[in-house]
Amino acid sequence: MKILVPVKRVVDYNVKVRVKSDQTGVDIDNVKMSMNPFDEIAVEEATRLKEKGAATEVIAVSAGVQQSQETLRTAMAIGADRGILIQTDAVLQPLAVAKLLKAVVDKEQPQMVILGKQAIDDDANQTGQMLAALLDWPQATYASKVEVEDGRVRVTREVDGGLETLVLKLPAIVTTDLRLNEPRYVTLPNIMKAKKKQLDTVTPQDLGVDPSPRLKTLKVSAPPVRKAGIKVPDAATLVDKLKNEAKVV
Image 1 (cartoon, rainbow, N blue to C red):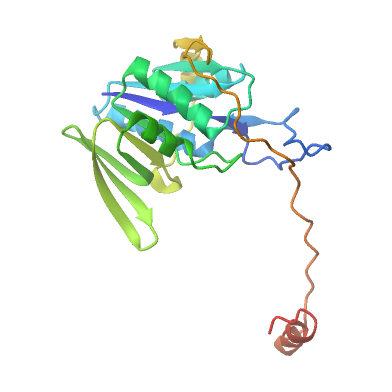
Image 2 (image 1 turned 180 degrees about the vertical axis):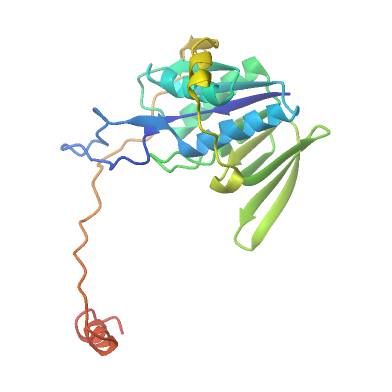
């Protein structure tokens, strides 16, 4: 079984995001970038499936600027066998990414696509669902457990009422949640091995996809600064302030 794992280059989750002075977007100049954490979980899960013998090849794919090669190298250091970069400087929105991934799926013919449920930069949570619709494949989102057996994938997912188990016939789309696994630490020897693994570069034009954005961002602004809190000596004072100053009780 061949598994395709889309990964995205985003601002590192430890970095405090800054908005550009002209409010056109987020400032990423001289900012540490890394793999989207949910996608890292997806790469780890695909690697574990390969180690169990359920998969024969894991392919990492990323769409974006040339520097996304670093993200693909990280995926290959975790365990992906090769990488595909869809290189473009265009601002990619979920639908464009889904169309690009569909083109790659049509070419590579994987039996499963595992990707993060959302990216931490736009929090759109749309690409996996859109890709499933374009391919007309079954999908299971927010996976907390994945098992492959007899041409099917059993996915346990967290819902409001507890846990839900879905059994999908392959090929299928699976999006990962935080509790699916804990990605392994990438060692130096694996980083060096990743540099020798195959990494192919294509463009949206090669895939016959127009990545032009369909939505226009009017303005990006930082959240308002919260006022500092105060300490009160006792519960009675707290109740008085809530009642007379905040007027919430």
